[in-house]
Image 1: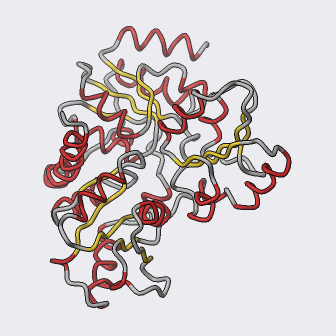
Image 2: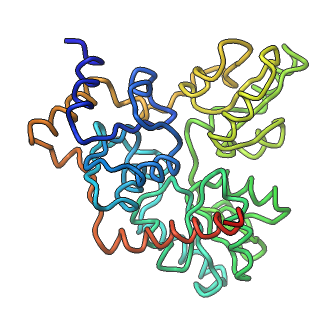
Length: 336
């Protein structure tokens, strides 16, 4: 059986949209109807008429689609976990708020902002406290807006993203649990991280600069601040793609982000900023066979609950509030 042909055939037969994140395997990515980063995908899905969405990515992304398009049935061939998103849940969120309280910062002086890489339950907690969601491409504007409240920003779950944007805004940051003074910080970061982006180091940058003196270094803001400080360009997934595709084809560049995305950007003069393969293991769990089985289950009316995304009404309500606050800031920034 030719899986690609069978998948294409099932897509034509069914009321379904196949969606894939940039980090997916090439064979899955190339069959998708919609591709992009996490929030971009959720927004694009809202514009489709399909009853079913088959989402190839990690769990929090499928939840975001369900929150924003509750009328759709959202299926994931593999409900893979994002390690960073799994580093925080409702319990850890409350525990870290308590640590801030113990440091002399009451809840009424805290505005939470969660990176999109978090569960719907965490987004709901943030929404209930008056906070917002952000992405790596809009975090700068979201944090700026949050600071207008006069409150301290509680940034979850990625400490690197929080620290990097604090630096770009000339603000003080602190990480809960690392001994830093929380009361002195403008942005207080939860101690989470992306294991893939932690693979890139200053030594990697030095290696490439020594080998190719004119090389450019571009990295994702989930990288450690020491790495971002040494880079020529720091940007979100979509910003990295735009930046790299705009370069002269003879310009050498080393990129600090997930392997699959970098590998399909250019045919030459593009290097991975790591001595090891920076591949997201959970993003690579989804195979063509998984996609085929999920589509076939729709056709056979035999959908497994293990593959369908469910978000409770109360969680969806507050998670959507946090997301909508982000969209409102974005629209104002674009004068729309």
